[in-house]
Amino acid sequence: MVVVGAGIAGLSCAWRLQQAGHDVEVLEREKTPGGRMRSERRGEYLLDRGAQFIASGYRNLHQIADSLGLGHRIENIACTRNAILRDGKLRAGDYDSLGEFLRSDLLSTRAKARLPRLLFEIFRHRRRLDPLCPEKAADIDRDDMASYLRRVVGEEALEYLLAPAFSSTFDSDPEELSGAFALLAIRFLAGGFRLQCFQGGGGLLTRTLADRLSVRIGWEASAVETEAGGARVRYLAPSGEQSVIADDAVVERRREELEDDLIRVTSIMPGVFATNFIRNMDRAMVEAFAGSVGITDLSFDDQGRLSREQNADLQRRLAPMVGDVNAIARAVEYVITQPIDLNIEEIVIRPRKSLPL
Image 1: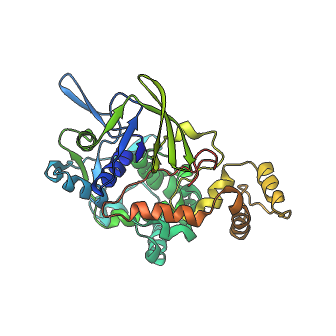
Image 2: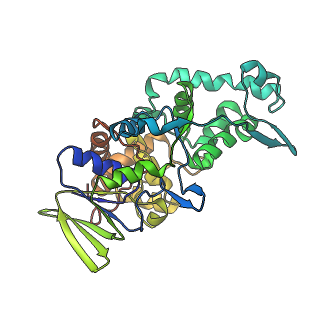
Image 3: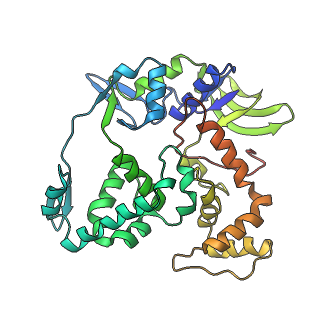
C-alpha cells in the first residue's frame, strides 16, 4: 500500500496499516517528514514548525504515543494568562471561577445573561455531541460558527469572548468553522482540558513514526489513478518520473493545493456533503446543477444558501454524478474506528477520474 504524505495523518495511517500486516510505503515531497507536526533545532532553540501543543483529551493521539513508548515524554504546559482587547483596553480573558467572570467587565450584563443559552444548546444536543464521533452531529450542522453563535448568544459575546477563543486556538475565523463544531469543542473542553507538549517538540511523535516506517523523502506524488490491479501512484523521484501499482492508496493533501477541485468535503460528517458542495459554488452554478437534475424552483436565504429540504433533494439527485455520500462516510468510518484512530483534519473528494473512492 502507498500513503501519500508523511504528516501526522499519513504517518499514523501508514503505521496502523503496517501493524495490521500490510507492506506500506510513504511518499513525502519535503526533505523531512512530519508536515505540520515537525520540529527543528536552530542553535540552542527547538522550534515547532506547526502544532506546538496537544490536549489531554486527544485520546487517539495519546494512544498512538503510548503504543510507541512515548507516553512518558508528554508533559503538561504551565497555564498562562490571556487578555482580550476591547475599547482600547486589555481585559482579562481567563477566569478561575464563575463569580470572577460575572464580576469582570469584558461583557455587559445583558451579554452575560445570554450565555446560558449556549449551555442549553449543548444539553439539548448532548446525544449528538461526541468529539470522537463528530458525524453524529451531522443533522445539526447547518450554519457557520459565526452565524450560529451570533444567533444564540449575540454579537457582543461572539466578538469579545468566543471568536477570540476559537480563532486563537484553531487558527481559523469563526466564519470558516461550523456551528456544530462550536458545540463539539465546548463539550470537549467541559470534559477536562489541559494543554500538553512532547519533550523534544511535537516532531518527536512524527520522527518516531517515520523511523519505524519506509518513508521516501523528496518523492512527490503527482497523480493517483484506479486500474484493474489496484491504485497506480505516479510520483517524481530524485531519479525522475516513475509510477507504482499498489493494492490501495491513501492521500493526504493540503487545502491550498486543492482550490481548483470541483468537490471538497471539509468535514467527516456525511450530512454536510451536499451543503459544502453547494457552498463552494456561486448561485448561477448551483442553479445550473439543479436544472441538470430537473430542479427549477430554488429558494435561497439572505446568505445565498438553500433550505435544508432543497439541499437534501439536490444531494439525492446529484449522488450519481458526484459520488455516494454514504459510501464516503462508510470509508471514513472504517478508518477512524480502527483500534488506533486517526485525527483527520480534512478529507478531500476529487473528481472520479482523478481519485475514485
